[in-house]
Length: 222
Image (cartoon, rainbow, N blue to C red; front, side, top):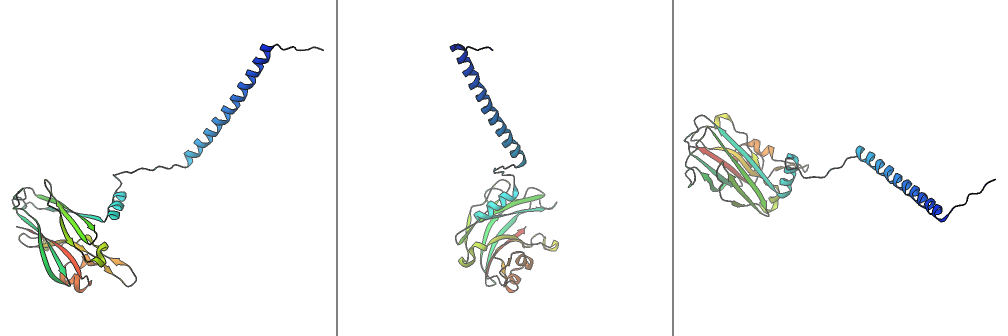
């Protein structure tokens, strides 16, 4: 039979050791929880960012803002030293009502085409009942133009490319390369801009697709 007698210093040391052990237990519990959460995060990843190189994201943004654009390129070994003119023609009920010269090569900046490839972009935006557009070339841009839209269908106007036949690409001959138009509306509620563009000429667009108001982009290489 024996007896342990503890002094005050021994009791203090025992209490400190006991507290340290409890602290270690709590710390181990926290570490285990963090490891568990880390393991879950590896199985379920979430990332939120804006990536300007994401074409789908850019397309969605442009659509949301009512913005659309067209990129055009013309190539020919005979383009050098040629002039050009780009007109926008407005049609109502199949009749030409207005012609606006958007740009021509004898402007104050550059006189002629100086390369075998001629590129330009057209950027447009719907603003209430108007459509604003601007042409961008290699070294300059035009002023911003604004055209009145039919208010009933104002949100449905977009730029739409027209398929160009090879025989239409001739010097000194105007050719249509782009539309600003509403779609052809179907009885089932669907709509199609492609069917309008497939008609190719202003008279067919009105007669076949029943489009009451649209604009035609016409270009001539001189």
